[in-house]
Image (cartoon, rainbow, N blue to C red; front, top):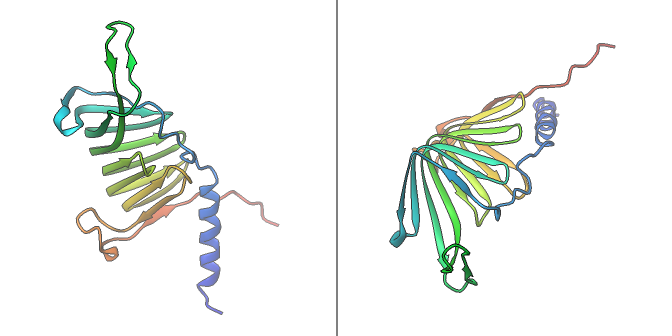
Amino acid sequence: MNRFFPSILILSALLAGAAQAQIMKNHDSNAPVNFSADRIEVQDRSDRVVLSGNVEVTQAGLNLNAARMTVAYKNDPNAAKTATPASGSATSNVTVDRIDASGNVVVVKGNETARGNVAIYDLNRRLITMLGNVELNQGSNRLTGGRLVIDLTTGRSTVDGRSAASPTSSSSGRVSGTFSVPQRTQQ
């Protein structure tokens, strides 16, 4: 029998225990996206908004902070128009498709915190991909690596050693972590 097999079983048990409290699971990506920043630039012809300086974005209990973000949206001309009470004019339905964040990116929901240099939140696919010096914390459990992918549908998070400079090479780094284990009494 392979002597590494018991180690794999132990690691699998630790990972399963750490994954039980999946706060990110079933996140509502259709909820309104609220934001604040020191500066905002609306680029209507490009269908995007550029936020800079202490940027904070929230959506259904998910908080995303960074130095800079670009929000890509689309203006759906086929969506039903609604009249605003103050002006009586019609406004069209704008939907956010993607948020690109850079500069000390932090994503927080519940007791889970993810950090990285860059993040891409694809609202349509319900994925957050973080690159560069990523760290995922859940309570006292911690994983570090080069890339983190958070699936907001399943709550599954995947960390690998790929670096932002070389996204196709898995040999550029390693994943490391610390998992807390329940204290057992000696028998």
